[in-house]
Amino acid sequence: MTKTRIILDTDPGADDALTILLMLASPEISLEGITTVHGNVPLEKTTRNALALLEFFDRKDIPVARGCSLPLIKAPHVENDNVHGTSGLGRTNLPEPTLQPVAAHAVDYLIQRFLAEPKELTLFAIGPLTNVALAIRQEPKFAEAIKEMVIMGGAIRSGGNMTPLAEFNIYEDPHAAHVVFNAGIPITLVPLDATYQCLLSSADVERLNRIDSPIPKFIRDVTADYMEFYLKYEGFSGCALHDPLTLAAIIAPQLLTLESHYVNVDISGGVSEGKTYADFMKVTKRPANMRVALDVKGREFVELFLERIEKFCAANAPTR
Ligand code: RIB
Ligand code: CA
Image 1 (cartoon, helix red, strand yellow):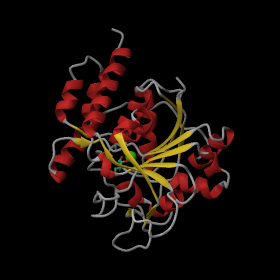
Image 2: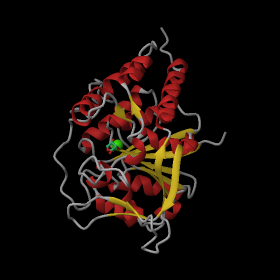
Image 3: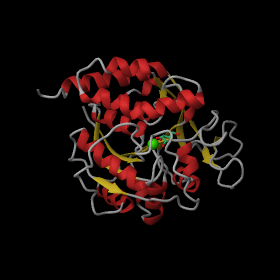
């Protein structure tokens, strides 16, 4: 099987952590590098979390490059730690990592990796798009070197989760998203329209915890604050697998309803700042610039997630 070779730009983040785990548990994927960005928690924490996760998952071979701590133009939001916990990884208590990030800044690292192997690497972006936008602006050849980009972000027909209209990753840096959406990169966008249909329930987490492995306990701890937030503010017992659903584009595309549309983001600075919109009626006469996952077989994806984690735990059972 030819593996999809991935560089992941991320702001871990509970669901980011589950995405890294699912990548490592999926034989179709080769995770070859991580770049960190501000987002769920400040950059120091997202970088520390990425390093700590790779040590916990016993994958210290995967390099991490530290990225941007601020959006391109907007002021950073007040640390919104109530969804992912103060650390950004819920109630886990991973040891301080011994791993260090590489010396290169994430923007330079992205440029180096993609120009070294043009059209060979897939870029997954599951946090604000600041690093990617700067790489596009710094190196004119960067965008064309990307084989494909898969982005968790946006709300097309769905309401937003940061404002009534805007989704977190895009809202945090709408100007970066505008640069990325209009750079000519082959993009698959996975917005809230699909991700809110993929709810991991507490019963699902308990099913995993019947396995004798530290990983299910990690999943319970990393999602604890996330689940509490959803119950308190959104009224359901579970958490949306926002970031992990991006992987369906590679491991289970049949579960996604993908449509090609011209999509852009509002940067006019008003009430709809960060709103992503699709030109369904083709009134702009602009060609489609991305595929958008407007629907998903949500429960089937959650079952796939659970099966992959169960297999991964069995294959990596702790030696007694
Ligand atoms: O809106 C969901 C997105 O915001 C996910 O990437 C989550 O990790 C947060 O960053
Ligand atoms: Ca994220």
